[in-house]
Image 1 (tube, helix red, strand yellow):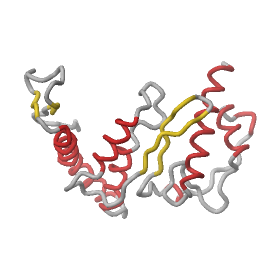
Image 2: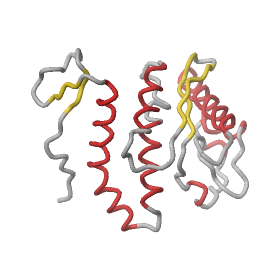
Image 3: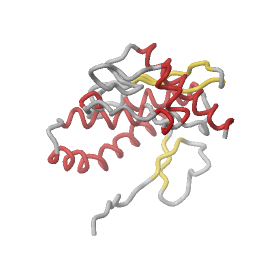
Image 4: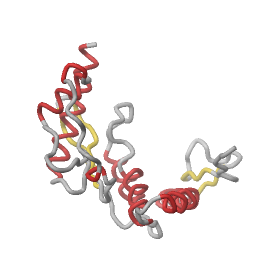
Length: 193
């Protein structure tokens, strides 16, 4: 049976945190050190996974690590239950730039105003290689999810290649416009249901 063993996992918190003093919790005085230790622990856990994935594909380790950094730095996007606050943006931006992290590109995470209020929007620093996928066959519009149909009406599929909504190959303004529109479509679909 395959499994993931995280070993003796510990938690790191700053002084004054409610978990400080609990078993398995390390307390440090510098909040930046919390971020650095957390990222370095993430790297230690993910390294064997990156190595294994690299053995299965022609994608280089740098590209795989960039996906990890992008995922960390954009973790709050499309998560309406997470409060939209500048300190969260600052924490994630600082975390992806931790000295010793193996990714070479950095995502951009920002707060944008929308008809829904403040939301997180992002642009990846690396590339998920979505553009290498063959074009999707034309689907019957009547069978599409209403939010996705509305999105495709506003943003028809890219000709020649498929780029994700957070693609580093897009202009940042285009990434933001697509994400805001998608969030609004999803919310409208909830209200219509």
